[in-house]
Image (cartoon, rainbow, N blue to C red; front, side, top):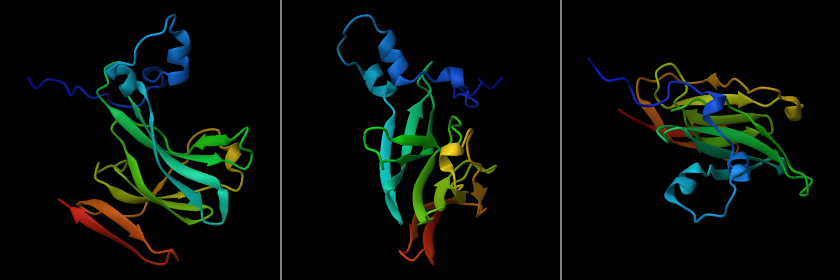
Length: 171
């Protein structure tokens, strides 16, 4: 028989323990280990909203902690207008093995990005429409799949006017 796939099948909130909670539980000081390094979420690619530089979207990669055998990358929004108490929202649903990437603000309410979250598992272009009251989001936003090519899309590029885009495809 074929051995089961070792990667986690879906997001399970119990599979993820925040770094804050984990380190709060530690009872003694310890040296930083490779496991500690893997526990750390990776924040990357911050981009300002084109019409309001206090609003930022960034990527967050988190790892499946029971076995460190999977990860998920999601889009997050933060309002930095009050630097002493920033407000942030996770925009896309975390699913183990799904990675959102290469995003672009089209206007203050529209984001285009690449992701493998479609049924094919290939990187495609998705659109996220931000609501007027983004802080009122209780769950995650559902992205709209824009393309459905039989190849993975990569190297997404959008001009400043957001009127043209270019990308490459890989087999």
